[in-house]
Image 1 (cartoon, helix red, strand yellow):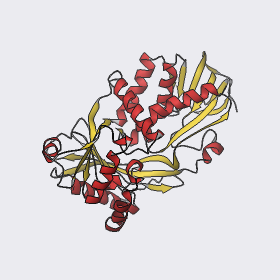
Image 2 (cartoon, helix red, strand yellow):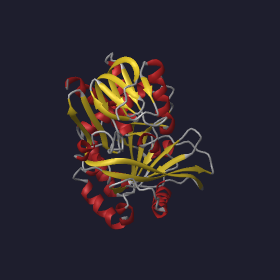
Image 3 (cartoon, one colour):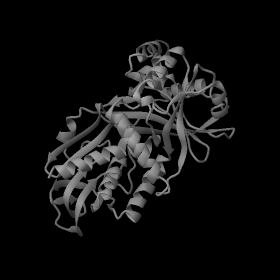
Image 4 (cartoon, helix red, strand yellow):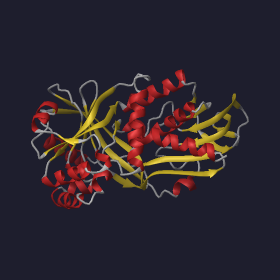
Length: 380
């Protein structure tokens, strides 16, 4: 039953449904245009994909073209607002250990594209100085663009900053049940709005399920873990390996990647079948977040296969030499995955729905949020 209680006397220019990174990015994009904004979040704070993944803002390796451009722009927005919002950038840049000659071929091809701007192959002396913890390989591709934030606190700090300094109103513990502009009906009452942007994250079963069904998205579940090295050390940049060259579209879709992918399908078939590739980032306390794997299903899978964790740890030990580690946490990340890297639609005038369907919300969300706001303002 539709409730008649009015939650606010305001008529907002934009109501954003969803307090994950895309929702917050959309709110920020609207604020920058001088619009009044409310964000409606069904939980006390978003606890889904935005806080369960790496907090790793990745540029190099994003799909070539518009999505890579989204990542570069979003990275710059993160760099601008993180200090304002009290969000600490834990480290900058990316070291990709090339374990095999075939990976060197991919890296060299990448450097010849527009995506390789600012990136380079490190000399051995540079590797020894910047990443002495990396095992011996064929070399290291360095990207200066990447940023690491602590995802389980960054979303809360960004929310607080938007509320306290950008005049965004937040309605938590509140579920939007329907949108009939100028009314947005919620579990607690009605909000009035000129426009509505729906950012459901990984949950496509709420508002406009028929629209989101067009994505044909699967739910991707990721094995993630936090480890504490016995010997303290400082990670100077995120770390990846050959498996990432074979998985990230910006590398893997280059013709030169064909040989590497075929080789890894043969010699690391278990990892490839489980969607394993290596990402290593560090937190302020010295612990490392290590992942991940990719399991695709029609729903989020609640069970964790510990054999996949073994594959991830084995790859970690092949790439890095930091002594013994203690696994302190396990969890499952989740995101919607489709052939297209993002999905957006306008199911009715004044309403836009959008989701990042490639697991790259932290990396591309600020740019995508700007796109959603531009579109919703044009749709009425």
